[in-house]
Length: 452
Image 1: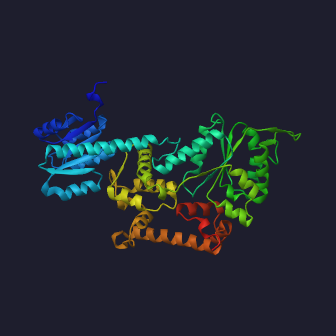
Image 2: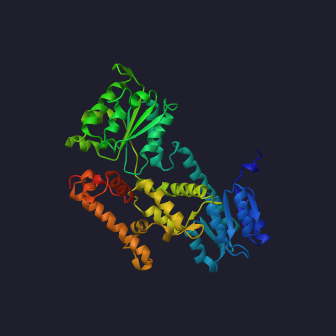
C-alpha cells in the first residue's frame, strides 16, 4: 500500500471548482480529497466510497448541504460532517449541528483554519473508532461504553471457568443474551443452550423438566454437556428450590427407571431481576441455593447508566427494521429525537428502547424519525417540564393519558400488595404472565414496592 493510500479520505463538496481545488491543496499532505461538484454526486460517492470526513458547502443549486448532511448521517454515520457557509447563514449552520454536523466554517476562511478543523474532526473520529475497537464485544450484545467493556471482561472470564453463574439486572437489560454469551464463549459452546422460564413455577411442568422428578430423565440428564438457563429464578417455589439446590450440588439426575444416577456435565446459569439477598432474609429464597447460584455473579448495568450506547443500539434496531421491511437504507434519527432518547430514563431498558424504535418506524412519514414520532412516554419522560398536551393531536393526548393511567394503576396495585405480583395480578383480574408483560411494557418494577 502506498503512503498516500494510508491517508484518510475526505469528501469535498462545492459547486465551484476553484473552491474544491483550494481544499485539495490545503489538505494535500494530510488527506486524500475526493471532489464532488454537486450534492447529488456527493450522495452517490457517500454510498460508494469509505469516506472518513465530509466538508460541504451549504448553498448549491441542485441538492443543498443540509440534504447531503442527512444522506451522510444515513450512509456514513461515523464520518464527521463540516459545513461551509456564508456569514449570513450561520443560523442555518447551527441548525445543521443540531441535525448531526460536526462543525461549521464561515466563508471567507483562512486555509490553516480549514486544515485544523478537518484534522480535529478526523482525530476525534479516529479516537472514537479506537475506543470502540478496545471493547471486546460479546456475541449478540451491542454497546461500546466503558460499562459494557467491563461487562465483556467479566463475562469472558466467567465463561472460561465453566462454573454456575448468576446474572443480575433490571428487566429488559438482556440477561438471557449474557447467559447465551457465557454458553457460546465457554467450553460447552458445542452443546445445547436450554432456556427454562421459572415464572411458570406454579405448575409441575417446570419441576419435571428441571429435575426429572416424575420421569426417567430430566433436563439435566438430557443436556449432558450442555447449559441449562433458569430465567427469573427468583420466582421458584421453595419446594422446587430445594430440588434445584440438590441438582447444583450433585450435577446428576435420574437417567433410568432403576434410579441409578450418572453425572451429567451440565452448567447452570440463572438470572433474575429480584433482590435475592432480601428474599433470603425474609425466608422466600433458600440461602444455600443463593450461595450455590452466585459462585460467579454478573451484574448488567441499566441503560440509563450507559447512555452512550443508546445511539448505537438505536442504529442497530433501525438497521434491523430496514432489513425486515426491505428498505433501501435504514431510517435515521433527527438530532432532536436522538437527544430525547438520551434524556429518557428507560425503566424498561434495552427492551423498551427496541420497542420505542419499532413504534417510531411504523408511524414515521419520511426517511427521518422526528421527536414527534417517538412514543408519548419517551417524549414526556425526557422533557424537563410538563408534557405540552396542546402540541398534540386528540389521539396523541388520549394515548398519553392512557399510558399515564396504566402506569399509575400498576404502581397503585403493587403498592397495595407490597410488590406481590401474584396477588396484584388477581386484583387486576389478569393472568400473572400478562401482568408481568404489563410491568415490562410500562417499565414498572415490583421490587420498588416491596416493604412499603
